[in-house]
Image (spheres, rainbow, N blue to C red):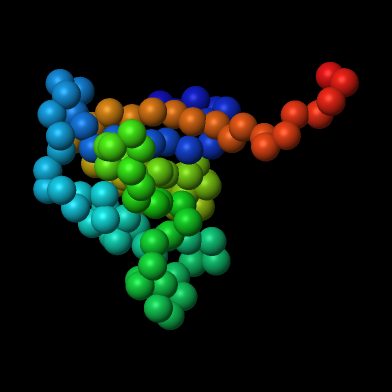
Length: 107
């Protein structure tokens, strides 16, 4: 279960026992499958770029997929697919929240 205050979930390409997940392009493949799920729904050509709700990245030398919780709100079955992919493959997940760029002065 994802905490209510979480804005993003990072699925890391490393298993709970510390092994690197294979194949090496797993993050690109997963995000490619999820490319149709986006604000406003699929558009012509949307399969050619990643959804803003499911983006591959590298953090600390580890391939990751950043999944925004807006996906859960818009497409619950797509959210379940991504989260279950991580669970089924024993991948580590980290919850994140948005930190503001500036903190108001005087508080």
